[in-house]
Image 1: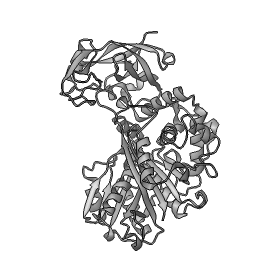
Image 2 (image 1 turned 90 degrees about the vertical axis):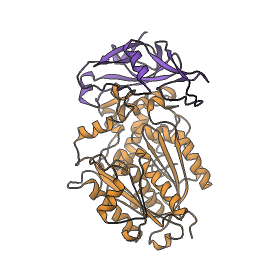
Image 3 (image 1 turned 90 degrees about the horizontal axis):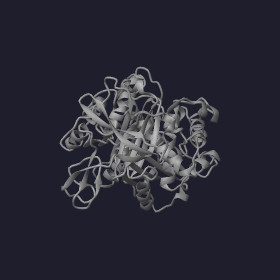
Image 4 (image 1 turned 180 degrees about the vertical axis):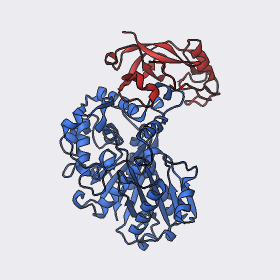
Length: 136
Length: 384
């Protein structure tokens, strides 16, 4: 993805600060419920499965597969126009949670449902954001 | 006398480009039209439900609307559930009149998204939709989210782009029979195939329109419906289903809350899918309608597109659907978009749909969904 000015930069809040701090250290983390074991994403104040507030931050295996994707031909804002066509995808991480990412550094035509991906971090002003890359 | 709440008045404004209109003038025109249709006066309205507009800023839209038309109702509130708003308004108003809180509730929404703001502003406003930290940074927009639903659906079912195109063509054919529709020029399967890709696999003709327009209806208490002059349309069943807001958190991309909402509505009405004569189901994209037709249970998984190709979703087919042309061709004016489905349902059940009329229609299924198949509301309406 090009780093054109104006692309949205995530603004961490009280629920998500540890997640984004970890990204800036090139680590992908997620909430694991110490009560029921649920792998939770996105970060919240309590577990959606058992309501426990005892959530631990765990390092995620930086691998996953493409659950679904689209090749975007019409950008939602000028900041993304330079990237068209780009791939927007839902990635199922190996630890059992789902995230939205772009699949970057590839020919969009090579992306397919089920393909394995790894995680890289893209600098967005002062915040790194996780992105997916094809690994096969 | 009807036992259930009754829809006594409906109206839609002209839809498309309405030069000189404002969000408020469209609201007022639709509201006065629906009240007049019912044979009532604005002064008879004792409850109001509004939604939202994006062309202007109204932190308290329902209050601003009442001020604009000069009414002071006993009850006044807003509903904000995207495309499910129109159906939820009916369910909410029905609950209020059946509980005796109000006699005649006016539901109204509209926006002038074509003439009131630039296309880029519309697209940018819609792009604000999405989780601000976990979706928006990746360049999501509403079409891209639905494109991901379509990609997964096609992967699982083997559905083809032709299935989607069949829906576009059918909707345009229906819109051509409606005097108020936005887009009436016939389109072919080839036009759909040649349309530019917006977000693969969705192409331009898979996407709803952006239109100026407004709609309104009056929901009346069972014992007050006789004050209206129209043939009563009863709200026989209603149900909602809510599974997520953001697509990243959706529990499934092929089954949705419409399954629960429709089950609840059918159960309350005491009827089944086969009893339905005509359906008006939210169609923000072709894929929206396709997955909902299956998730609701009108067709087996992967079969709705084949049915569309075979002509089952138009007059003479097993389930005439979106007989006004839907959001794809009749028009889409913000929260009013889902209300157009209700307005058409009422016209079908009153047997006032002229050349679009499904003969002897007695029972209609109506469905709205908001977000990315996030918020769902189903209605069963019956000719009283």
